[in-house]
Length: 373
Ligand SMILES: *Cc1c(COP(=O)(O)O)cnc(C)c1O
Image (cartoon, rainbow, N blue to C red; front, side, top):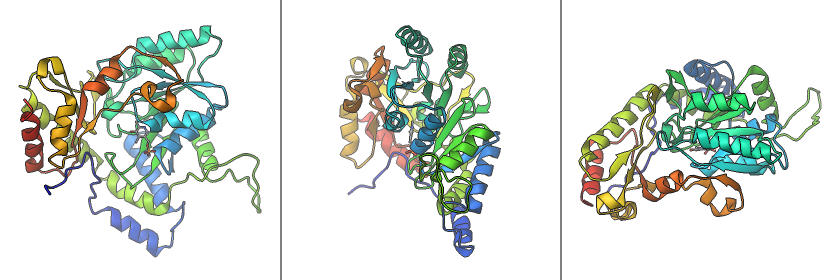
């Protein structure tokens, strides 16, 4: 069997173990402790923001944001359709209705014009959306100025799903800090990982509320007392130790991801019909995954044939995310589509982009890719 190449496997740097040892030695083996506090503080310093709550997953962070925004049964929540299901599932946890919005071709993220059309239409139909879940897909920041302006005009709070975009910049400011809420993920395949985990970024008041809700909503009392439903969503002190170690490598990881992207782009640029994800002016993508599209009318081959050629070589590649409005589970959801994300899904491919890849690994991927042409 040939050496397996994964899409974006965990990449430990050695610093993580120190924090885990500290947790063991001090017996802070619990969903609280110095690593949890330290990870939150260090992430805030990295992002240049004030307040964050470490939780068990990015999905949990989105769920908490929706609860704090008082999203409940029957409410509508706008959501980028071109994303992973973790962005949208929490809407259903709250018995609310997702309203999926398609993408634009410049960034592959939500189309601001379609967003405004959708907001007007929902308001005309008598229901103002409670929030927008905006995604910076594959690390590429969305059109934040345009989207913020629209959402401010209609007073709709933004939850920025930066699960894939930690380390990405919009006008030199880290994404995840623009919306009323920002969320991060440290799942196994993300740019830094804690095996699983997430973080919520918001104001001091909201983060206080998030910490309360994520520890079973315990009222202040000597006994256990609860006046509302809580969740067991707080991050463990062991897991947070991995995060503190990983965070030290984040800037290096962004540079390496960008190098990997540039290498593929340079090597594949002669091939007809092959195009990589664009980068908007004034933004810096962390290039979490190198993603490209293959236009079958120009390429003489297609995405699926290329994907299968990698399967045969024990290399993990993936189609781009299947839009939420095309998912069986959301087949009855309200949607505003323009065909962009469906086309990206049909023609798009993610290439192995692990930061521990060697030049030989990269070369192997390029050779197989080219052999299809
Ligand atoms: C990974 C991811 C999530 C969910 O994060 P988890 O930590 O896996 O729950 C949400 N949105 C997007 C866009 C993601 O890629």
